Amino acid sequence: MAAVEKLVNEAYTEIDKAVTRGILHKNTAARKKSRVAKYKRMVAMATGVWGEREERSKASLKGTCEPC
Image (cartoon, helix red, strand yellow):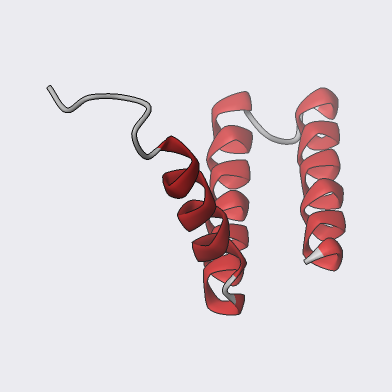
């Protein structure tokens, strides 16, 4: 998963540089970064990393709040 994190950070950097240079509009950059994050989430779910984190957070929140 660390390799994916590194690639995502590099992609964000390149997108931000393109905005700074005037190649991309800031809204287009935001859309592209959102898509990169979505693909990262898909990879995490496929490898099982995303589900484990979600289950841990649910387990830690049990009993801390009453249902409305």
